[in-house]
Amino acid sequence: MSFTINKFYLIQYIDEEGKDNSCTFFAEDKFEAVALFNDTYNHLEIVDVFVSVMDYDDAEPEYDGQPDEAQEWHDYDPDC
Image (cartoon, rainbow, N blue to C red; front, side, top):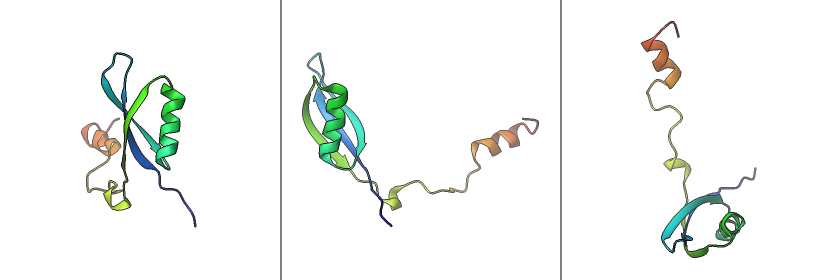
């Protein structure tokens, strides 16, 4: 079984007013993230690219012991 783990990239850039700004992309690698940035903001200058990899252990658990939103509403107003 093969699957791709996308990484979370934060791209720091200079906006039209000359101020530092940043945006984020999910991509396979830095080159794909920069390509996505350039497709959207091709006239802006990239200052730096940062990456954060989320491991499965870092993800939120499927069930955290708390009722979901639908159950909370039902408990609050059973006629809902």
